[in-house]
Length: 242
Image 1 (cartoon, rainbow, N blue to C red):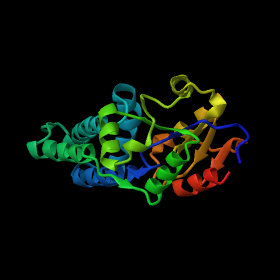
Image 2: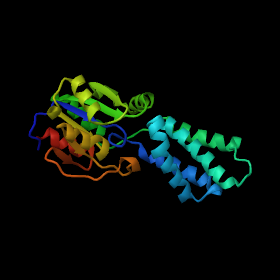
Image 3: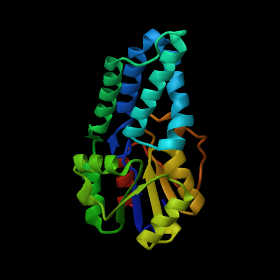
Image 4: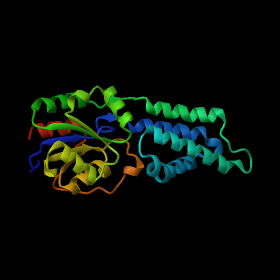
């Protein structure tokens, strides 16, 4: 299956080991409906997406805290657009509602995917690879989710990156004392988990998730060192039987 000897398995967390994006979809829909008096849910969502791309990511990065600030900014802009010279300040109820949406996202709601725990146990027990949790986003949020998942003990190292790019994967290789060709990254984002690792010279396994954040959508391609699996359990089974 893979020509190069793999020494390090780096595993994405959100939407690879456990469900995450559906929580954001739920809150996005609730937000757009709640402020429907200032615009249609569709137009509200369009503005929210624009602010995520152009305002949130450049200034605050990833995570629930950054997204909560973005919802607040979006609510202000929606009200300003609809105000027509009237008071544009958000009401106390509106501020509280947005804050509650953010609190929901900040509290870990972890649903570990079927077969993940057993697969990690088997990969760990084999002793053939070092297991690394390689995620990106807010450090505290990611660590809280990992703790809530109950999967922390399976990993030899945890690497939370500001961004998943070639530079940070190079740093991961140095930390793990491995060459790029000895690294296999597993994840659900072709943009963040797959493309940069293949560019670096490593291997990758792409496991598409039900929901993909729009900023993570890129054109996919085939590669000799790219695997495609439907589930993490399928990936583990293929690797263990190689």
